[in-house]
Length: 427
Image 1 (cartoon, rainbow, N blue to C red):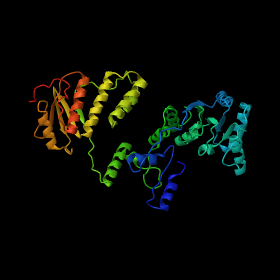
Image 2 (spheres, rainbow, N blue to C red; image 1 turned 90 degrees about the vertical axis):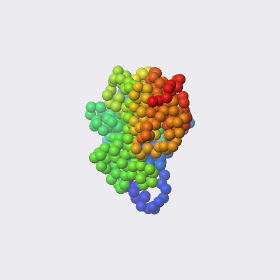
Image 3 (cartoon, rainbow, N blue to C red; image 1 turned 45 degrees about the vertical axis):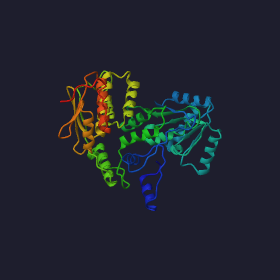
């Protein structure tokens, strides 16, 4: 991410139609957005090196006791410390303060305005462990691999960008030792709202999982927007139409350029008189409930719904029946959208299914399916499907709905979707 858009545009002009491979821990918002739209291919490496441990990250106020304790803890286990202070004009004062605070440590200074030979000597002393606390600017952000340095303290972390914080944090924890990163801020009531969002995004990273940089880049995309896809401008007109609508328009345009059929976008209607929602007593925060509804509605695979269920169980406790019903209903709607079914309405024991006008329905196969299952299914002249559903518990109802949709997907004989004794023919 150290190359800006201007640099990338200049590289593109050197030679056209040359494949370009970009490798980064935290893709910039525009690059990530292009990958999500399908304009660029994206591969994610999520397997950490052997024995690599997650970095424990803490957010704290600038406190002498906290700083001294964290430095001494690292020194006592034979490690080294980065203290990032990105203000060259007073970095000497900060180093002097640390020397008085931790006289047991051997402290040195490194920043980009030092002479090349002087900087090289300091870094050599740090690598060879003659110095164990390095007070430095953000010059250490990229390229350093010092396995013995496993504690980093970042002063005024609110002045750094999200990707920059992640890159700095990645300079520690490069061995089997447990690493610690301390983000020092003057106070949450003092820093800007954007800075607070950046700090919160970094603090909320799940330490036990890999792929943290990708998740952080997603948060960066939400905070900053994607910018213009072409040219060097880092701003666009997304706000005028909304990010989601803009993304949908881009996806449609890309599909059209690729010659892919333009699939109509619609929201299936499912009416089955089953109570299904997230109770306020289970998730008290209204915004959090909206986020969960949104994630459930946008799930593309049944496995995604299962992952959301597991996450809710971990965060809020045992999942109630109302939410199990909601997840099952979302799974039915997901299948309906894939089959381009416009509506599925349960009236008594009859399920009325209506396809989208543009649905690629093979009428001959549909007629054959209805003939094979004439005791439980029939077709209207407009090819509306009416299937018989046996009354029962909600779980049994969803199992029957799933069976009907599977039958329609394969247009195969499936007598047992009612999971019960087959009833009389539909009138």
